[in-house]
Image (cartoon, rainbow, N blue to C red; front, side):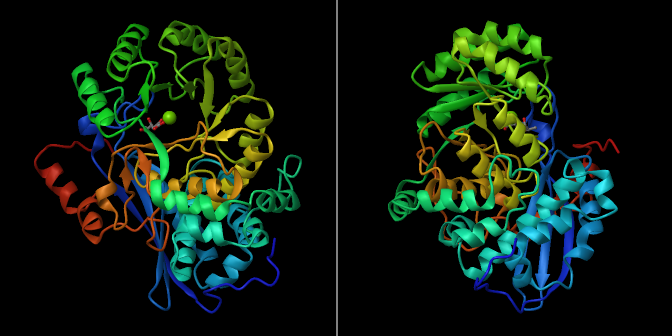
Length: 454
Ligand SMILES: C[C@H](O)[C@@H](O)CC(=O)C(=O)O
Ligand SMILES: [Mg+2]
């Protein structure tokens, strides 16, 4: 897992400290982000800053829904002894090995391993390290990955448990095979960007009138693919899907998302009733751990032309491996703030490429759009080389909190040029929304706008 002969910026740069902040926004007040399972999310994140002796710092995050953000922040702190005092360049040169150290901490792994709170904490730390690396190289992460020597890129991945599907040598070979046309694809990304779909039209807490309004707004912005939440009540779902089709027509794409609410048979029966609306996919129809259940649903819905998408709560690369092997998903939804951050997500891209499954990242929340479009752009320049039937999700939430937020034009993420992973929050965002003492939170508590449930 060491990259031989690599030249790494930051090889003499010591990491002096690491901090984790509990950041929350009161999105539940407007029903934004709501679905059948998560009815009142307050979009939140654990915001990690990795400070170095020369002032340059890396920022990364993992996405949460409000309560529990403090628990993930505590876990980052518990892991921080593995990062503090380390040499940044040495981490990057042996990144796969470092990732294994972080996920194999001999006592903390007992409360994971490689899943749940501990893995969310790992994702936030790892994402901050990639932001640091990209800033040191003076490149956005998509370009850092695109320019990286295949051996060095593959050396960032821990292949333990997945070599039965893809080996490091095969991953290097996949990158070499797809190198032709890379410059042209990069130019195209800078000119026209990468396509996205929106979920901003269909949160479960939105009224019918608001859904119509949002559809009109996003059609006017050039969107051609739309996702709506389902699973609370079949009659309401039929009504909402009807509204969507009336507003977006039949040439545009419709996707539906149940956020794990159903049993396997219930998912099939429910989706047969929604088949007349021709959804491209049903997302998270059942438990995110039920590989064979998803395979059963995929098989049953295939005659209706409905595919299965999942991954935003997939625990780790091993679970992704099994979903891919079992033909349990047709659209693979990596999430930039889950599994173990960039390094482990890259391994999922390689497995999906090998097994011929399309990656359509989950985004939205806080900072997920900011991060994941970098990864999908790298996939386009360097691995899949294709945009066919591929989109990145887009949700219009909290972009204004970031110093270098995503830019979406004509339903495409534009390729950013600012160095880093687009994860640095504005100082005023921290002053206002750090929980619970930020000025906006104090105002909302004092005015009785927001009631704490802790
Ligand atoms: C709670 C989140 O908003 C979730 O509903 C997001 C999601 O499932 C999606 O965007 O897809
Ligand atoms: Mg979803």
